[in-house]
Picture (cartoon, rainbow, N blue to C red):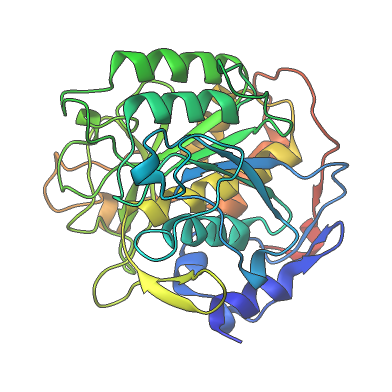
Length: 349
């Protein structure tokens, strides 16, 4: 069994999340974000995380937690199924079809109990359109989309590890900003990858949209990777890997591979958000953001990059600190969604 698979299998149990794994067995990216050593869940329902990506692929480690959402790829040729939009979000065979599985695996590595709903918005050409991404985002949160059945599993968290290429790189596309505003007002947290152009993230959609938690990538030393976008739009950072030390990710059908990119940083944060919402299901998106930023660990050397203007937000994701803060801080709340879990303080972190 590969390293990521054995980690995931070791912490999955019906109705229970319990970390009791030797630190030597934990992949470096999970060690860097400080997963708690013991966490007991008594949630009535798992938190739903929607993955706006390349779609669903069978993967033994994810069996039982993945769900088919909807295929929003409009172009039949790019969809590869000759039908355009339909209820089957299965990923394309080959090409970039692995991307959604890699993202799903990383969310699962942080929160093995989360329900993962695949919303396909990226086709075989590794691109998505503004309309497809916007409709997929709204549908994932449970909002109505004309001509599409309502989502039976509305997400509390949406992971968007992509950058729109069909809009100007001058900031968030207005149509996407309107969709983001609706989704956040609905109570759903949106986590997005900052992008891999080594440029200001604010230029990109959706990373540059107000209300989105944009995530930069760090290396094993906890500093910004050379490819990671940066700047005022970035909320915090998480491991994204380098050519010398990549991130272990799951492959469709089985096995793993090493990848790099902010696409892999965002799902670590999305997984952490799903844990926060399991701990306190009535937290607002603004409160979740506050918890993540207040609890983030400082960058090595005090800043994420030697170049001062290359900022990466509040620091590096710290899951244990965020969970502890969620239990002790009074923050804005909305309506409750499920029962909470407890962090076992007797076990430490």
